[in-house]
Image (cartoon, rainbow, N blue to C red; front, top):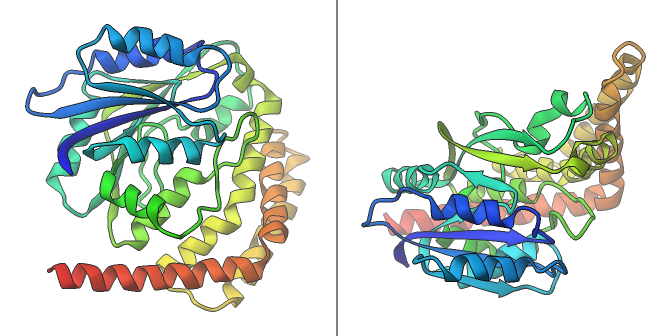
Length: 325
């Protein structure tokens, strides 16, 4: 693919914020030698998001597209955006993200400096559009806020990924289990599933504190009810992500799933006891309850099939890399 960056902005009823998001992109300070484009994916919005996006981008000199994806779900919107991308790196920018003016340039430099770097990200900074519930401030990482130090997970917000890897993931017959946001339904972990699949292909992840993005949190997302919904969504995804981790670490036996289930059950009981002394533990309790439900929903047999197929993918990717060398 042509060397450059395709910025994908997935929107669902984003009229309240899309102008700020796109204006931040239009202020990017990029070397003239770096080609780039903006792709706005309107994911079944009903509030005129696409009209606002077209008005702003038509007055800009940056190549752009505003396309519609009627099938609701973040995974479907992202897949459509990747299909339209023409450059070597995909920069995901959520509709409520304001990238600092050097963000895209920094992501490009990081990708160019390491051919085995599959994905990278920056630091999330919160902008509250109201008074957050006091529990929210204790769980900011759920909202992609703060620096990233993990080598096995990156925020989906502000995530930059090699286009070839994403096309390989989306074009394959492999069905992604975690669909992400779908209208008002929250099933978290879709970003983590992508990063796990990148790791299985023998690439690495990285994060930098040199650049930031502002995560604008609307008032409804600052409530206790919404925080609990997010915690439940992340909890449901835990068994699937654990299955990927088993494959990455080549833990083949089905017994690991049962051990993991028992460990989560113990953590749930412990947090229920701690909740009597620390009230904020209730959010963690909801998280572990959902994780237990996740095991029953996905079933250990199905989760083990995820491990088996992931191990096959890991082996095939290793052979492919060896042959390229």
